[in-house]
Length: 183
Image (cartoon, rainbow, N blue to C red; front, side, top):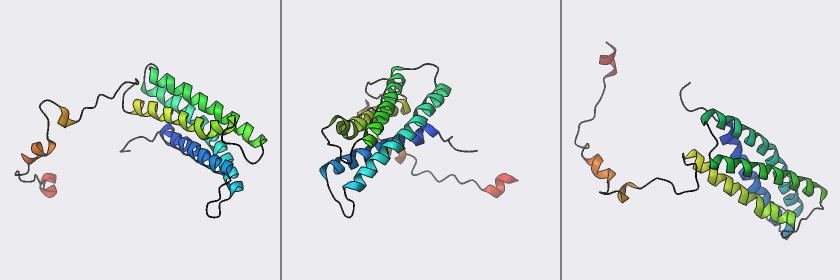
């Protein structure tokens, strides 16, 4: 098969992040008692609870697939990978505790309560940190340092891609005649 292999981890983590953001927004709107269009607080309450449950269901395979796929690609565990694993386990624990508290609590949760703060601020912050380390790993950087990328125009002497390409504009296109090549 031509093309890149699909990685389960890369696909599942996006769902966890999206669901954490949906839960945060819906929880805040539920706590404020906001009605938008026909969406009233009872719907927001259902939405943030369902988002927490689905995020927990997606987070477990995301952690497991991250560990198994990671072990096929690297020999050791750099600091970025260890941080990502700890943050992932923290997020799974937070989601489990929040889900447990959410389903035993009444309909509305105050935004400034420990549960409200965990859902509205805690989960998105942990997801942001996970995204930071995930991008570092994906881009090949295993530390919290700056990336090594330097734009071409900042090099000494500067490199202008258009100037380099202009040298080849006058060249005639190289056309391969398929029927001639086959014989």
